[in-house]
Length: 201
Image (cartoon, rainbow, N blue to C red; front, side):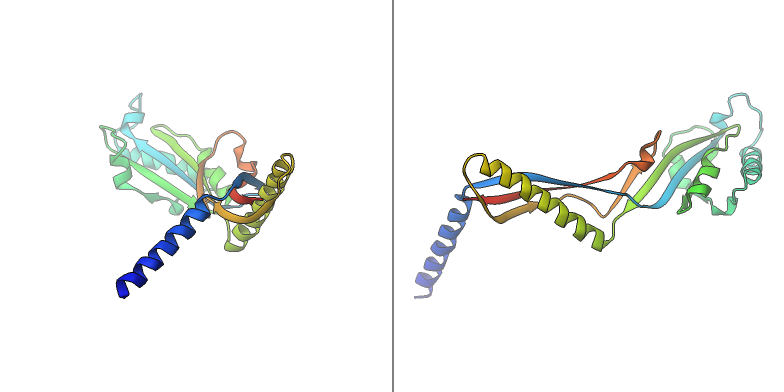
């Protein structure tokens, strides 16, 4: 008796699943733009004897001292820098050196840091981290889904069809993203995108 009940339940689930997969549908990509908010800036600078091409300094301590003097002249607080010893080793430099990392929410502080050049140093990366709040994600998803609905309605209407319920939503947007800064991309708009599958009636 139990086996019979399980068999009937299995067949019922199988038929329902097949019926859902057999539905006609239409997919549309919904998009909405938004102003991105920088949570923090990250910059990494290398100090290395390998970069002291003219051998102006005898030690890494001298290179660091000269560099820090220039940073302080630019009104940058050097205590904000953290050394990443493991990070420097991964660069593969043969001579002594260090990797210094700055993380800050201040655009001015970030700029004061990356504009300073000194013998034996190189700013290796300049990144911005953008973050969306849970409420922002909810609002943007709603707008993008509505955009997809409007597109699907127009496409379906052109073939004499209508759209029904949403069958599936694909959303790969992450709440936090890191992006390399170059030229003028700091002011670029964010793009929230979803793929929505609707019933086709």
